[in-house]
Image 1 (tube, rainbow, N blue to C red):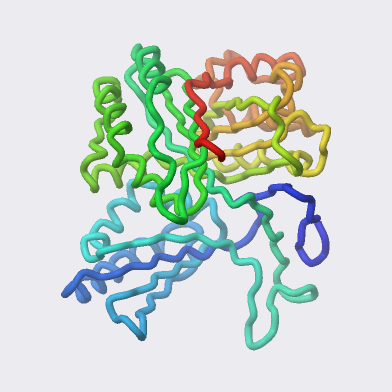
Image 2 (tube, rainbow, N blue to C red):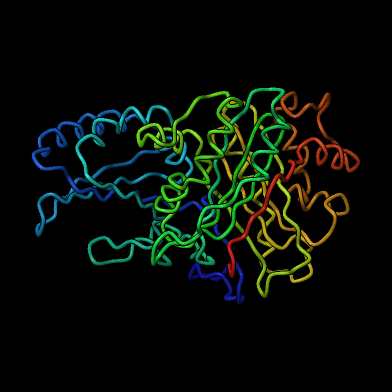
Length: 380
């Protein structure tokens, strides 16, 4: 990393992480229903009072368009992305924003890391200033996201059969948005579905759940779900997408063309209560090498986290058990011991903490997820 905070410009290299220390700016663009202004203002005041006590929250701003008074902008600042993501995907958040949603026609959320800032005409984060400069991320123009939910114990085989046979929805959402790839994994009774989108994630998810082929899968899954949902009802769909959301908190990928030999694998890491973020940070720590080493068998890594559930998805050119430390994200000295203190070993079915090199294969076997389906859109 250079002094300016710019990463080396390796062609095709990807390096993104919410663990870079940058503060977060959350932005919400809303268009009010006619006559809802006072209800909206009252709901905003109540929301501010509630969110003020959320750990990591710094401040809020409410702005009204000077050109169209029905358009409003809500911004909030957070110490970093992890506490915001924990709150925005919580049951508390669902209840907090419910009165606000009742006042709006449209709502679009955006999230940004704060990389540069000026105060009084001077750069507060410049070299020699008060704040370090977070690194500029290098992306690939793709949004990575996952959804997770559980099914009734004993129904796993039937659920796998349903999910492996479904027809993927039309990838074309609109002129700016396209579904690129969907992968579904199982670990016990937990389903994790990853999606890759070019464009607007919210538009892509809304498009997908409205398609008849997805509705047919939902109908077949319904008897096997632990928690009922109705994706045909906008409110129920919104609640499900919030409860199931497992955002990508880290991604790294090597430069150069994609390898046809790379295979996708996923690992399930249940964390001890309250330690999910620490575990996600640990298994993301060594992956800067992925972006710089053309000989590393692990070509891409994406880490998803929701509360105390962490999933690490890798694309690897070798068999996972030939490079277990790299696939697990535990190749650094002391990383396995640190992970043993963060993992919920009982949930993984481990009777003792992993402690040595032979235990890496054991952990790999217990954490490995079953790939049910992996679908790419044509020409993606």
